[in-house]
Image (tube, rainbow, N blue to C red; front, side, top):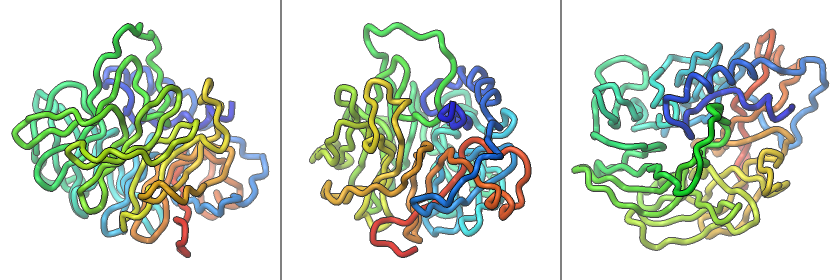
Length: 352
């Protein structure tokens, strides 16, 4: 039941928006379940808790380029929104968006603006708006079909994940989804695509979770190989494909360090159950751009994932770890603290 506690927040990363209602019912049924009497020791990995709001979960942190703010997907009583938080203490600043499509697509576009998917104009598009949630919204590009996880490039093109129907697979009747798993798509096959400013689309590779390098020349992503998933890297035109990880494990959700030297990712490699991935132990790992120096960063029996690296040399990630009574008191929070919250830990060779 411990893992079930972590299935709280919802990023609609692996589902059409039409499934939101069923998933939200599931979210409410599993949120707020927390053992408040069990003794919780200091984390063995020295992770620091950043966000903690009563009865709320926070997932998928994204640190602003200037290192002052972060975006998180917040869920409370079925209300799912993207919020902006202060990086120094995790305090909420404002709601950025409550658009269902934005929950799995929000991304920084400089320090003052964000991009996100929306069908607000009668068709799917990539939009841009101020991060304070106010002011005009600008549609950057018309899009179509089932697209997820978009990244706007400097030349006006977009890297995204397109979902194709998986041949020969029966559709499941289940409408509940695990928000932790944003690399697996029920009855669908994900591909990394690039869509030019004028709408011309190129299929670059099978895969999901694209992350663009700080210099804007390469993309790292996760691709399935049997039961395993490995990290790959290629140029933005699909050339020069290299494999970074090769373990009997699931390596997903990559993100770059600001200096372009490290890639952090989610993996079950420390305790992998390939037949039943849900029983695996999920932690944050790091690997350098040469595919060497693989290091385990987080170490906890809870599920750690969705890592993002700040300019301060710290890795921010969501985790459904238990929160001790002392930490709750420090954050002046009473009541339930079950679900996911944002934690941070230092990168290798960082003293932050």
